[in-house]
Amino acid sequence: MVTFVRSKEFLLIIKQKKMYLDSEKKKEIFGKYGKSNTDTGSPEAQIALFSYRIAHLTEHLKSNHKDYSTARALRMLVGKRRRMLDYLIKIDIERYRAIIKELNIRK
Image (spheres, rainbow, N blue to C red):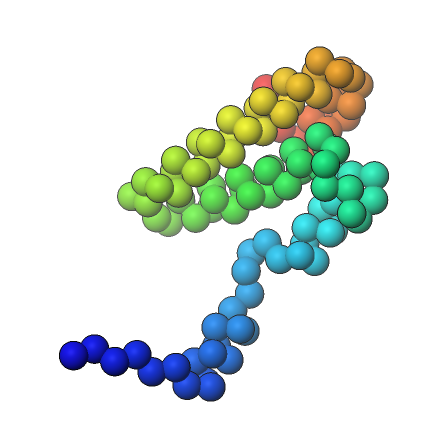
């Protein structure tokens, strides 16, 4: 028989574990690349967020090369970013060139 014990120390450890992308980091990214801290919809802000997540997953896969579900998630994120960049090319080529240069994304 398996019993699960949830002590205060255990819950405290879970709460102290910091995620790689918390709301403060998102606000920082949106503030830097978007129009404001709450601008979550502009293509530049979304591309910057995707790039941050892609960099994190890439680092994870360097040490966990058999993590196939993360590899799939990474490929999906790269595709999302590519589609967003293609959309940005269609609407404003200057904004596209600016975000590519700022994030050092090669094409």
